[in-house]
Length: 154
Image (tube, rainbow, N blue to C red):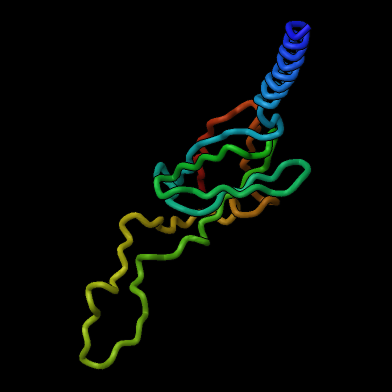
């Protein structure tokens, strides 16, 4: 009698385990409405070294992507499908100018307060047409193309 109970319990546990395994496999498919994308933004054959790339799907909210100092970008949760694309660089601080800091008369700026800009993005001025959804010529279908280089021109 005990053997029959043990066999029934083992079968029940096996069935429950199979259900959990099936649920885990179904959940591993990922989100079919999101895309892993990457690329680069250039202007006049040089990297755009900072700013924001905006994706505008046909429906839904715009999606922003930061442009890195080497001109590249990469995200794993971008909207899937055809998009209009804008690029803006106005958000990048202009680090070529010194920081205006009032100092007492006859005082030199201490070394520790000088700004290290070696790894910071530098503003690259680009034509204004790329910054607005209404005027940008850039498009991208993130469903069919996962890696894209945007070569901006005048």
